[in-house]
Length: 239
Image (cartoon, rainbow, N blue to C red; front, side, top):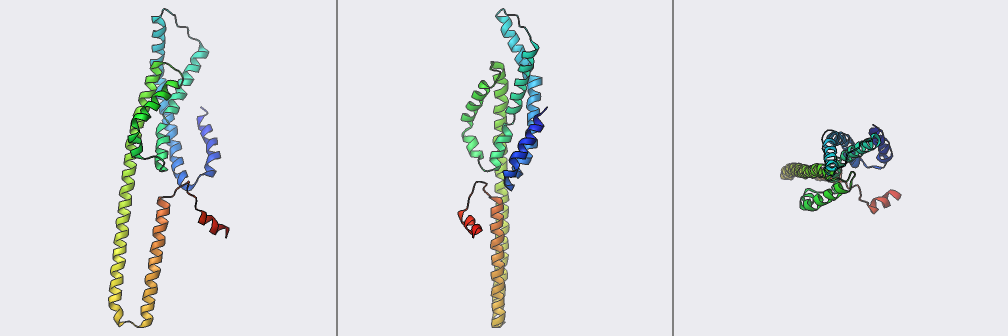
């Protein structure tokens, strides 16, 4: 019940120290993470807990032990399983946030799939409660979520490459159009006076500088690195 409030207070502490590009990743992640937590908790309560309790009851009966249920231990067991499943279903949020921040790529995830499966199995074994049924019920969804993350990372990278190609083509068309206009002006420059020629050259220089500035600004917005530190920028700022 207190999970939304916990996330809210953590966000108040963390958000002021984030850059704009990081905030664009964090805000959607919070909403999606909350939904995934509810999905994981619901899966644990409706599927995981009945199967795990039936397995434990049958296991004790096969050994001639009569299972005795205590309300305190039962509530503790249900709470642990629900929280573990809810937090485990946050895996896509963590992975896709790393992908959006360019800290993880589709190729890296694909090539390290086998290692990731082993790590997920080990984590599922160490998370409470440590019984085989819960291990299977927790590890299988985690592996499926990891596979979904691989495909999502592939689609995101493909979309970004497509957008970059379209942007590069648009810039090439604009440069070709400006060059064509420049050639037409130079062809008509024979009938111009020296003053008109100087004005034409100054206008071409101004257009070129504005184009370079726009391209640099777009590159910075598209590839801003939250961990990049420019000492020359600090030097100019101090000056």
